Image (cartoon, rainbow, N blue to C red; front, top):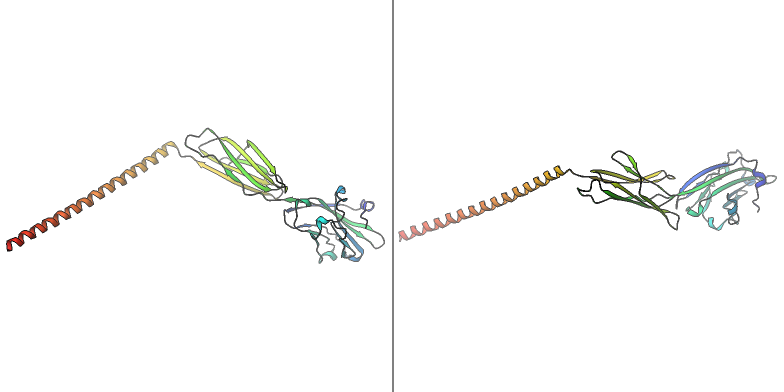
Length: 290
């Protein structure tokens, strides 16, 4: 059957909608013709790729002819992956369910409804832009190993996340005052499946209290994932005082241990002497009796 409908489309207002789906999910492409007393036997419904250059490769995504599915000319890429909502057809809902969405499905789809009572006449059409999005992994933020003498020196932070789509936005934030920091370098690397990995590096001067946040934003999904680094350095005075206290406590415990040992040794010595004297006294008394 022929799908050359351009001579009728000029008088029909074209609606355009946007649908965002995650990779591997099912997507519903909306096509609702609000008209009473619809007779499916008098209608033809075509789902096509709106891009004219693609029609040579795939002319039919899904077709409904006189109330019956007719997918003899369906593009192989969509075989067994499209469904109509049969309980809604009589109410003018010709929406299409697309199963297991992949990167290859990112197109603008056109739904065309024709009345065939006398001749083929387009009575409704709409376009649906299908966009894909994939959540990024929880970002991993690695910071410098700090010491008490590194304040004022340049330190480097690294943040990475992956397997997301589309390309993300990366933000570095100083959480002490919520100011934005500018990365030294940000690399976005694509995979064969179309998803992206992101690597970002931040170099700043170290401060006594550092609170750094790396945020990965997926605008399409309105998702924002973040990771934080916090380091609070003790002052030299408090550190010295703490070390002195620990040293004093250690010396005190050691002295108490020594005193305890001496006390036990003295107690045992006294007990031995008392037993020896008692035994000697008993021996003298025994010999006197003899």
